[in-house]
Every structure is written in C-alpha cells, then in structure tokens.
Image 1 (cartoon, rainbow, N blue to C red):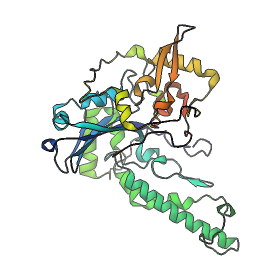
Image 2 (cartoon, rainbow, N blue to C red; image 1 turned 90 degrees about the horizontal axis):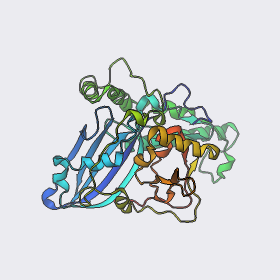
Image 3 (cartoon, rainbow, N blue to C red; image 1 turned 30 degrees about the vertical axis):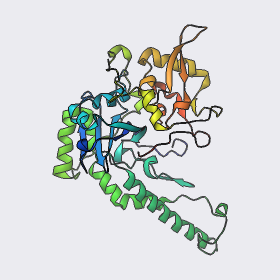
Image 4 (spheres, rainbow, N blue to C red; image 1 turned 135 degrees about the vertical axis):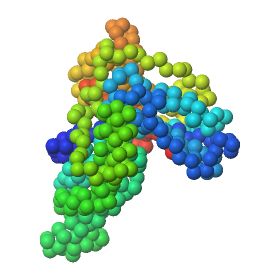
Amino acid sequence: MATMNLRDGIPPQTYGIGFKEVWEVDSEHFKVGLVQHTVGWPLQHDTYGGSFMYHMEPNIILIGMVIGLDYKNPYLNPYNEFQRWKTHPEVRKFLDGGKCISYGARALNEGGLQCIPKLTFPGGALIGCSAGFINIAKIKGTHTAMKSGILAAETLSAALVAQKKADGGEGSVASGEDASSFPSIEVAAYEAEMRESWVWKELTAVRNVHPAFHYGLLAGMAYSGFTLEVTGGREPWTFAGPSKPDHLTTGRAADYKPIDYPKPDGKLTFDILANLSRSGVNHEDDQPAHLRLRDAKLSEWQAGKSLEENAGPEQRFCPARVYEYVEDEKTKKPKLVINAQNCVHCKTCDIKTPGNFIKWTVPEGSGGPAYQGM
C-alpha cells in the first residue's frame, strides 16, 4: 500500500474485530430464519459496534459481535464484551442448554467508501476485503468481493488480449503460453468498472453510516435511520473518513478505569483459551514465528511504552491471548511474550497495537485456525 502510494490523499482504513460462535440448541429454543441485530449494550455509547444472530436449520444458531478498533478505552476487552452480551435475556433465552461447537475471530474493514484506496498498480489489483468493499451497515461483503473479482478478471483478460495484439501476438490468454510471457501491466479499467458497478452505488448509499457514530450512539442511530430510510444515501454531503489509524486512537491508561468483567461460567460464557480450542487452531512448533516486531532494536522500548502508557491493550484485544506480559526472571520487570501458536490470523495486532510495532506475516505451511461451520 505504502510502496505503491495507493492511499495518497485517502483517509486511513479503520477496522473492527469480529467474534463468532456456532451453537447447537434444543428445538424449543430454535426459530427457523430468525435474524437479530443489536447495537448498544454492553458497549459504551462512544464505542462503535453491534451484534448479530442467525438461526439456521436444523438447530444451529450463529452469533457474533463486531467492535470498532477505533475505540479509546485501553481497558476495553472486546472478547469479554462479546461474552457479556450473551448474558442479556434476549440472547440467553436462545442459548441456555445449548452447546457451543465452534469459535473464531477476524478483523473487518469498516472505513467504507471514504477509505477505499487506489485499486490498481503495475502487476496487481486490490480485490474484495483487501480493498475494503464491506457494506458495514449490513456487515456483508461476500457479494461485493465476488463482484470485484469478476470485474478484475474481465478487465485483466481484456487488457492482456489487447497487449498481445499490440505486440503482434495471437491475442488470446488461452494459448498455452507461460504466464511470465505476459507483460506486467496496470489494469486501470478495473477501477473504472468498479466505480460504474452496483458495488459502488451500494457503498455510496451507506457511506455516512459509520462516520455518524463518531458523534455517539444516539446520534449515529438517528442519522443512520435518516440516511437509510429517508434519503437512501442521496444526501449531497459526505462525512469525512478517519483522521488517524486505529493504533493511534487508544487513550492513556491514566485517563480510564479498569473494567471489571464477570467470570465465565463455562456454560454460556467461556474463558478465552477454552473457546480457542473450538477454533481448531494449530501451528507447527518449530516453524518461524509469523508475528514479528517491525524494529527489533526498539521492541523493548515500544512494548514498555505500550504497557506503561496504555496498560498493554494487546493483551486484551487479541481474540486468542497471543500477547501477555510476564515478569522477567532476571530484571523482575514486565516482559512481552508472544504466543504465536495461538494466533487465529485475525491481524488485529497489526492494526491496534500502540506504536504499531507488531507486524503480522503469512505463516509457514497450513498453520492457523480450522473453522467448522463458521
């Protein structure tokens, strides 16, 4: 992104951390086709987020919560907020007596239209979630990702054919030639086609929903109703996108109080490591760590700064307890430990860690979560 200057003049992307559980429930708690979305409790009014619940035959309930990573309180624990949400009577009544069979988490692009960067560069293009095509009002992005892939394939094919013809070739991408024989080109037509597609129209209609919540829950709800139900997104103004990336939004610990979360009961709410076992996560013990420090020379200073100024929020926002501070046996000072084998590849640490000193890289082989029914 930075190397190709794809975000020049574009606001930084903002993200959310999404949690999901799959439950098997008794028939009396199951309602075919029920869809339930909520906002507000247990989150504070200045924290963007919401929940979902879907009932799927024969007796499966999918539940989840997405919390914006632009939150300020360093003591907020997104996983514990999700667990607390399940204790609400309107949620608990469906899950009591049921069995959680799967758990997972991932980061979502939440910036919307304002944060979509330049989509093409020589030899490549941004497609789907890598570009940020999620309709955040619906928490849906599969359909837009598929459309972007279709348009990328169509425009690339046409560009390669045109290039081959210009070079005196057969003008075919199915001629059996080695892929390396094709030149590295930038398919600018892809972005042009995206801007003319229904994807762009859909994202334009909801462009002001997320920014409206920067004024608080009530203002966000009121404006969302106005833009979705009254104007259909046709208002002549567009709210500004984020002014800074999520890793710069975390407040100082001195300005906030620790949050006392209820202990998990093991039936409805779960300890994070107990739930992690339902993700099927696995990494080979001897593989290189895929969670790395951007600057090893500054790592100790950066980790200490995060702990001292922001109470080490990486030990709370990680949905797999990858990060923890333990006492160093020699210095007796807190030391950051990275349990990379726990990682479910949500990439939240690369987004939210103060100082942005953690870098998520692609792990070796097939390591990672093995989600079932998600």
